[in-house]
Amino acid sequence: MEINGIAAIGAGLSAIGAGIGIGMIGGKALEAMARQPEHSGMIQTNMFIAAALVEGVALFGVVVALMQG
Amino acid sequence: MKKSISKLIFSLLLIFVSTINIFAENPTSKEEGFNPTPQILHHIADSYEWHLWGEGDQSVSIPLPVILYTEGNLDIFMSSEFHHGNSNVIKGDRVYKIDHHHIVEENNKEFINISITKNVASMILAVLILFFILRKTAISYKNKKEAPKGIQSFLEPLILFVRDDIIKSNIGPKYEKFTMFLMTVFFFILINNLLGLTPGAANVTGNISVTFVLSILTFIIITISANKGYWKHIVKPPGTPLPLLPIMIPIEIFGVFTKPFALMIRLFANITAGHIIIFSLISLIFVASNNGENVVAGWAVAPLSVMFVLFIFLIEILVAFLQAYIFTLLSAVFIGLAVKEEDH
Image (cartoon, rainbow over all chains, first blue to last red):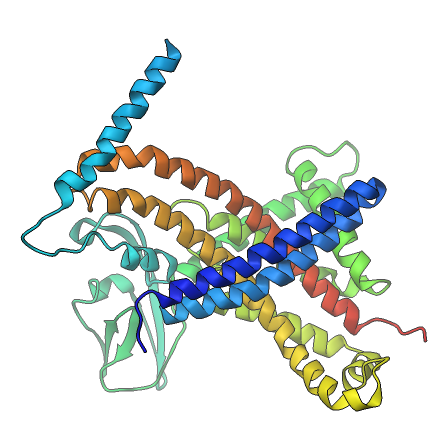
């Protein structure tokens, strides 16, 4: 079933997933930093780790879309 | 005075942009607009010559050596002998042809292709830059008589950050064995990401072969230095009830391979996607002006496009540092998991 542009829709959907995931991670990290400013460094480090893992999964979708379209 | 001038410019730009509809539409024939995809893909891919500027006949590019090993014969020649795919290169009894950026041998002979392509040349350049910068830092670090200045004052905090926050805190007491590899990975990825953003650069870390090799090296180091506790945890993760074991074991074994795989895909996709976004936003100018026909619309879209590209460039510089940091961090975390001493 060849629909033009469906690869782009797939990439867009995975971008939605990445946006929601990383947005939630960032929001929770900011809340935690506001509650305990003395631990900001550790919270920031862990935020980056979690954000990279979520983004990695979303980029799987982008790579599959690039290969198809 | 200032406000009315900016209003005037803005309204002029708006009028110019509207000319896109007036000129570009041709009611008698259905013609497509300018398709930027082949150009974008050409800029991201590897190639046998370093193309600087120009188009077609007037293109200015540096030819790079092509090194092929066919059945015991080492053929070395410059890629300019291909004449952009128009002529075959004959060396002895071997006839080479370039076909869609791949070199094929006419008589279907198997050959090993170890050419210096654009990515290889860019990697050599990056390694030379790194070598000289880091050597200078190391020499000025050895002469501890005075306060650090120059390149040392810029790099030493970065090196200490990588060693303390990434390597030492994730691997623990045995971190010194792995410092060499992780530092090299960090600076290699960083310098190649940053070089890839310069004009006319090669897309090194956006090449999946390069990131594949980096993640394979991480995988090899994890496997070699893993202690018995690591393998025991894969076969029997601590704290799982017995009925769950048949599910957990395949997942854990799968996980051994997906973690380096994700490292590879993450770096490749982030850098390539960034480059594609920058090229696409610049191509907005060419799409609006229909590849040079509608000059007025091109000039109107240009300020908008350049502003977007500037914004994306700043994000890409952040992404360059972030991806180098994340790759090194996750490698350190995986190595730390492998060498962790259990205190049950």
